[in-house]
Length: 394
Image (cartoon, rainbow, N blue to C red; front, side):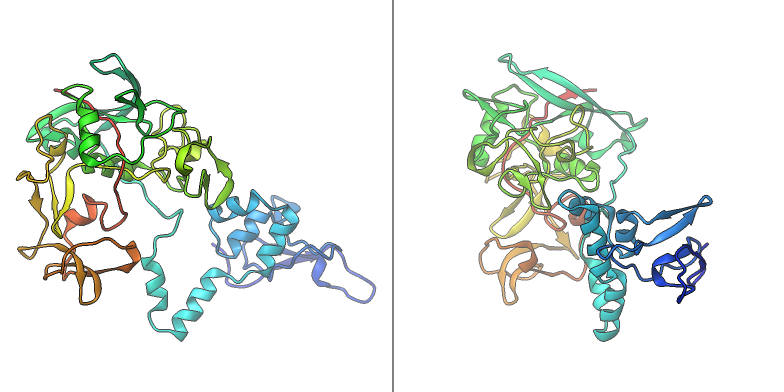
């Protein structure tokens, strides 16, 4: 446990006039860190510590950590800066935690507001206890191959089975998710790497193309997308800036059409589990993703229970009566323009529209658990293109 004070052990650069100059001081790691100075002037000004009976400099990463930055922040900066510059940037920075505390004193509640914002690197993967993942290749009825991720149901009872295996009260032993954004092979769609992903496809056309592959194939459901979202590793990146990751331009894929990159052509950090051999590619960015099983109908939020949207006979049409309303205190949730802008409310809305997520006003006394866990609407927006996912009965 560190002490709440600076502990100096020695000075390796005493002079005739100064017994303890700043540039030669050695500090103990059990104490607090002193002010970190940059190295531009030379003269042994680098911060040093004693570890295991030897004296060494603090690394740039350690300096950044002392300033309150995450390792992910440092890695992005490291990609385009020398160690000298990284030391300078740490020394010229303000400790993030201190700044938050200061604003918390100046503006009551400011530190609590900061906690509400998601921070990269703080995302926690949710455990899916009874699911086993295995990469496989499947062929549709026309003989077209697709590279898939098999999810195997290992639950000992139906009550413990993951929701992705429950389709209209039937428990399935496995489902298969596309590992790559779907691409066109004539009038067919496939899940294969290094191809231009399909774009500008309507919901009805996406459903038609998927079901053409065979009776057990279906458009990725909201329930399955939530599984992918929950099991995506922290700091997963993707094509978010014209073929590159916006936070690190050295992360890039092979350029394709419309600012997209070819499927799976990015680095391992663009795969949901950090592995190009077993992961799902491009879960972040590249194209909008279409999912089934959730809809906004005339301003009213509706969904299908569990993974019912995966059923071969699921009615996904606009007239479908298989969708359920999201209820809060027995009242349906509506999304649309209201007196305070774009509203998520149990009150009335005037039509329906879409805006940036930060412009949405949530006017609910309570947010239903299903909305937070089953619908990406609240934590993240979801729409556009297709994955493939066939089912097999247990």
